[in-house]
Length: 135
Image (cartoon, rainbow, N blue to C red; front, side, top):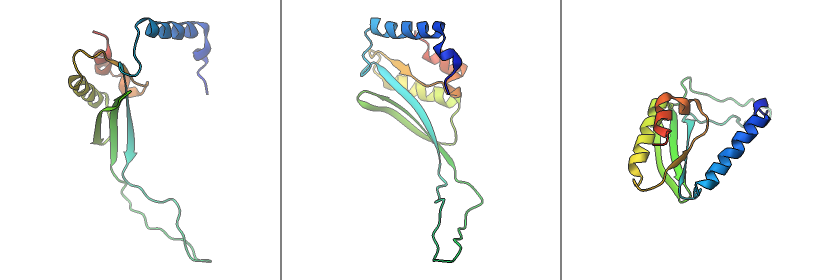
């Protein structure tokens, strides 16, 4: 499913200008860009199918309580993992901002930093946007 605004002339022009801007700044996608993403997992893992002898019903006992959720936030560049943080529970804008602050502190102050994040809701938080703005 493609958003109808994606292929409107104005949007296409903005994308073209964005890419031209990257080339004009001579951004090294291998060294200057840090990609950041998070992923959630549930620790309650079980098989969806069971086996039983021929002509016998497969029975599976399951726990009433689900396992805990774990979230991993990771940042990587062309050389590999820059920072990774696992945590119990889900991630909020506040938690993501804490991760970003620690990430920035861990990087060389002389290093050019361009962060790429997706449009997940937690990246839209005001504190995240403020931190990601160019200084």
